Length: 333
Ligand code: ATP
Image 1 (cartoon, rainbow, N blue to C red):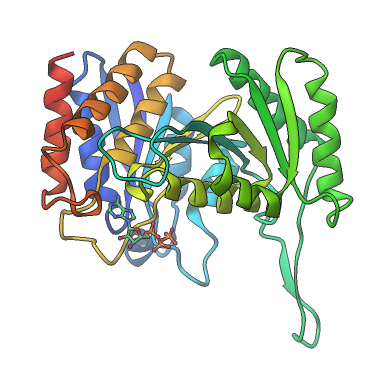
Image 2: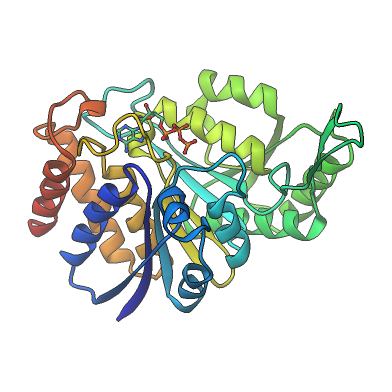
């Protein structure tokens, strides 16, 4: 029996989460889902965007599923707080094209690994005394760089891939990204069979468009990873199909790349696939690889058939229709 903390959140978060849970419940695995709160609706009810019980529950569970939240301007981001509390330092984002989906590149299959705990998202920001200048700290520690780069090389080995690309801006950010690049080459020495390369982030933004098929695993710092992974999601069919995992030495937190999408919230037309694929990544984390693969194959088959599609995929179907189509495919596997 796996204990799973579930945070639906705001906007389309609860509806895509419902779809992921229904999919997991259709598998031959026992789950105990513990529903917890976070986000804007939670703030309106409890005066906090992330109650202590949510963090405690995540720490007591085998893994956490997170939908989406609307971030308040004046409050610290609850998802960043949760990632930090769980020390899930690696944000793993698969970039994969699906047959049947109209997209810019039909044959992509690579990963972006984004450092999740520091960089420009360290949330150390302040104004000068006269409030005419605002400063944000960009923290890059040797320890965290080592953890994320080591994680990436291990993933490449486990998944029998060939290459790691390190992305940085060490020509300008000489100290912080200097550390990141230096640690990359230091760790690479222990993996002589894995090909390596490094690019400046601006060149990488171009290469993702010009030669995305040449990448296997891309490892980078927090903000660069955030931007590049949205760009990469755009190459393969958009946010509705982009899952992610936040993984540390102890905990795993799985969430779609998309946000709470207030423009379509409450209409039941959101695409649940990113959330269901995130649940699949959770199964990989729990070492339930057989079932994780089944979910991926069921999704591939559903999208290939093109019978059921939410509006973002060019159809007129509802969230629940796409969920049911995936569950029906699962029954046949
Ligand atoms: P955040 O700041 O929380 O990331 P955002 O508004 O910048 O929020 P999203 O909420 O991800 O970004 O939405 C961006 C666009 O993508 C919106 O037009 C939204 O409707 C669309 N979108 C996001 N997720 C989905 C989904 N699962 N299904 C369909 N459309 C989606």
